[in-house]
Image (cartoon, rainbow, N blue to C red):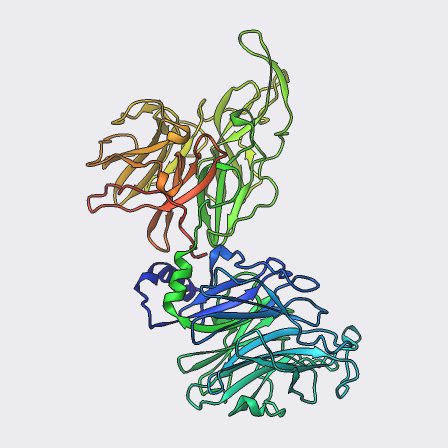
Length: 628
């Protein structure tokens, strides 16, 4: 795993060192049921593959009976155009086609009627493209079952009636096509043919799947030819894959090494075998490859590295999570990133949504499962009488969770709760896992207005409590209006009297953050609000509570960037990525004119004297981070 992590970290920052003329690799694939369309991943070494476009689809299918986009096969023409074919349905007699100059913007999709002349044809599966340079011709080949057409093979009950062979057409312009003919007719049911040219022997290698089901074969085999127009010998090699079911081969030469990637579809993972002698002997390297989560049958192909560079540069990762979320903090435990925040609703600050913990393995793909806080009905309004004797209705709200800290196997969450009568404070909750469930450390929790009992005690009677643990284990907490104090050893109470930090700039302040870098303590505080939010900071070389001075230069390091369409970067937090020694600032983006808040993230940079360089917020964001 260490090798994967190092490669990921380096690849994210080394792209700009890759120049035109060098080689990189792309993998076209689908996920799930393929209805969201074409996905792409890239690699520089053939072992480690990262998803492009944030793991999202580049093209949604629009042709075929079922409008699927399974098994996408891409081939680049000499003029630079990318041509793609794919399986459009489980039971169709056509295949899909589209082309693109940049793999981002695609032509109108077409249906190529390759088997419409065969009324009994059962399907057209896994079409592949191969460009034959000597004849300047594209070969499109795929698997079809035509009942009763070929030598029968024994099948399992679940695959009764399926007996595939490989058919093909040729084209020079993707407008006119040759008549459909038989391409590969062995004495077994065959699907998933894929061809690669051997750069040393200059012959062609075709990898196919033996699809026989009774007894089950479900393995990959190889056959070779000098000239594609003469076909491939139907006598194939012994299996090159192991004692597992494999399909969807994607052969690729990386230098002198031949890889064949494939779908271990029963194991729900991708695998690979490798040949160091041009296909004579094979070794399984499945434990050495790293693929995007959920990858399914596709095609690997070499491209100029500038194409990959362009695709990487085209990606945006902000907002970090496309949901209504604010006041973020991130902690990493094990191989998982945990993001805590305020769940917004379209009711202003008078109501908040159900709190959740967002989780990610790569800092890009986030999800949650249920809520980590129980005992509250966030949608229920409670009647109460305020201090002026007025009848009101209010709601419980969960705001601004600070960075979760771990101590002695327990996880501590410092979070603001606002009661229906607008009484508020920062409370300490504890859990056995970073994603909860979290419980109040003392008392019954918080009671609705009018209900008898005593609320759990707050660690501070104000909002935006943010913990900080120093290198010596001492704990501190910072909250609104520049207030701060020491935490007790058990992290549950204030230890001593609070202090007020002096800052260079005055005015209302919330969302404090404390972090330490190279012996310097940084205190970040917000000014103004809404679309006018900014973040300023102070520095100290003494302690988290003393010695703060205004930094040289501009002490406001983050503010709106209208040119990048980022408005009101407010309450945030700092995440330190040990894998890359980078500091990342996560913050709420308020929006222009008070739109719903979202979470953004950008990398921080520092000058030699430790001062923070001005951070220009943008939509590009951070991108992928390593899991461990």
